[in-house]
Image 1: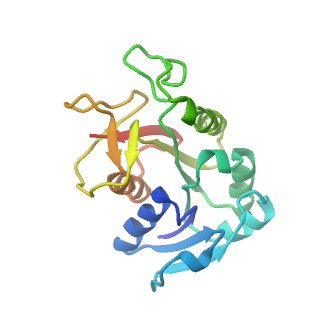
Image 2: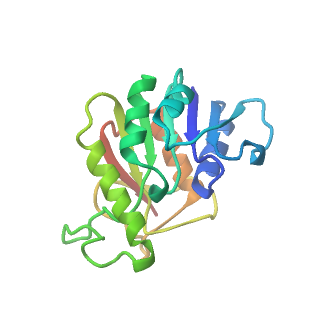
Image 3: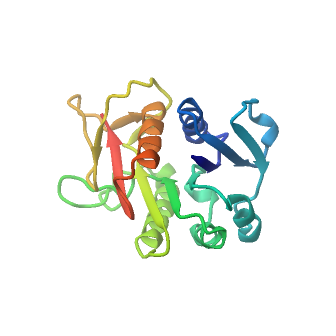
Length: 203
């Protein structure tokens, strides 16, 4: 596939790019600093500003799917959705947040006070993005929430998928490495199972 990745130099975005390239896909990386990307025969780096819908739509056109992996605070979901519609790309994958996942009582983690104050604005931005997508019917979208502990780690290929409830491992932790998260992203792009839905991944 030909996949556009917004935020390809970030921690999560770079791992999604690596996973896509390893599986033989072509990636167009849309970033502020194309010079930071290493050379690869299947990687095209393009300068782009995700805040400008016309410019973004032009860059997204003619791709099979778009992955947005920027921090949720750094992108306006209305602008992104408008750009996807103008580009006529039919699939959007969002590297989302964990704050809108629910605990065992059915309460979103944001409302249960389980999101640190330092991450609250990011979590609220994720909620706004997900709420907007849940009303969308013009294109396919998927919002993938990581587990609570989401950091660089090992690529194991061993994890669980869930829906709206936060996943907790046998050790009592809610965690996923960015490397394994990237596997789940590309799996979904290759074999869609969650069209117009949110899902989550964890150990």
